Length: 347
Image (cartoon, rainbow, N blue to C red; front, side, top):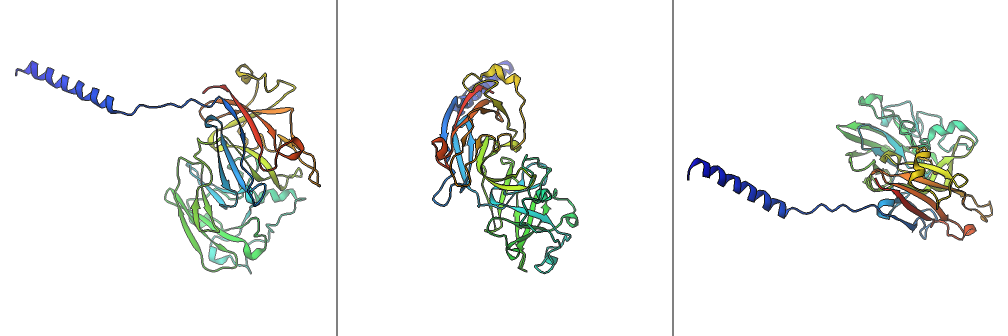
């Protein structure tokens, strides 16, 4: 075989191999986003009307639930080292004056702040993460690369309001992850957890009560809004424990806007109207604005029919969203709100 024929043979072999390789590859299937649906959220269990946090992904018509008491803190998985409190578990926290966790005791807690806050005192908003979801406005300072700069914190939550049930907790960096040291305030045996970041998720969650890392949220691209019991603004600037609170996935780049039906009705709102609204990344864009509360006797209340919402997901899909019912006052059931959404622009 001469040199020319050898080159042709090698070329034909390469083409044949490439063709075979392509034939054997699995086809890439792109699932189009949902055109819209109506969902009844599963927030209610036999235990209570607000036992779960419910996460909703519009593009896949899916919801996922997590026990709202299944974790105490979340740790960011991005390039920062931030700590967030479980807002659905009445969680409060405060920094002590000490960086040695063994030096923080029931007799000398390192702070005089009472974690059982006074709702009439606006200064107690420092005990919670701010409700707009700004990751820089959290009760915990960012975890420093210098261990000695990281203070010990005291942490309380629903059912642990007595001081001897509070946790003392110190969080430091551990390579690209975290080390979490903690114990009840009256205990001397310190537990420890090494926590690895996971870039598929906004947060990695830790249960101090069960000494383990838990999965609470879906992957960061797998949910748009959540419904839950949560910490919110009392109206006095202080924290208040609130049922039926709706958050957007602001850490997952979701944005949203509220629209008045006086401007445009839900049915009439289309893609051409998107240019006239301003999207926000605030976690509480929806918050409590979608419904009215029942009376102290538990009567009345209902979804607001004069507002709806526009949501832009992480893939650029835009949905309009309205709430149909959530309580007996509007024909619904507490703990099982009904939402309706429609795709108006494909990403």
